[in-house]
Length: 280
Image (cartoon, rainbow, N blue to C red; front, side, top):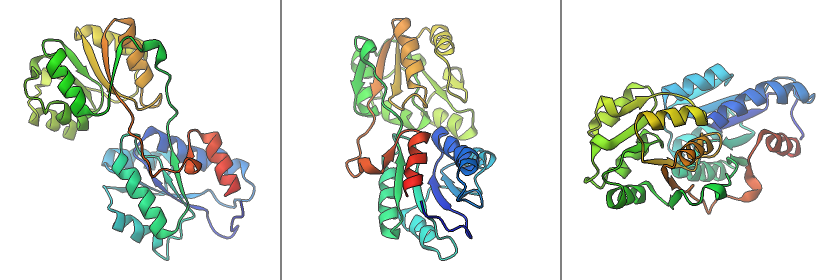
């Protein structure tokens, strides 16, 4: 990797995930300490869609954060600004943030900046196949609940922004519908606006262990969970494993496929990031 020793290597990072936090910490510490060609730690500008995500990115070491959704035009303006001169665009958005990734790909092409996507490794669900019902969308999950699990206790473990799609089928009994969401005002207000009462809202932040998930599922007498294939980082395996051991049905929303994504521009761990940057 031929770097300009008189200038800082500059990275535009689309984040808001645990992956992006790990990338920031890696670049600022391990990568910099092992790379003698770098005079300074890489400069990182991180974008997130929330103040919460921005705060975590800043605490992790990001030099600058932008805490709002950005359009393609806004991103391109940042990338092409003479004062910025970014060397690479890293997309570490959520696996289900399809529109964000498409915007990232298009923006990097327009700005003529190398693009790299961090994709979470796939999980082998084969041992759970008799307990999992795979669906391709949250609307499909809602339809399934409405048709087959209407009188069951449902625990939604897929984030506040997916609840509305599940509830499109208004015959779902909200008294039996429980949700785990981030403990922030906007999440609680969103749940309330959808008719979900406080006693059905579990406000918690974090990726939880199998044992903790089992305790939660037992507490709410769960018959079926709704979750998404967001990888080990997103806690998918521990949720599925917990439900499986308790004999609870699992509705799992498949990770969306992005046809515009080039496999040569994708990595799934920090070692691959190191290799990519060293060859850059």
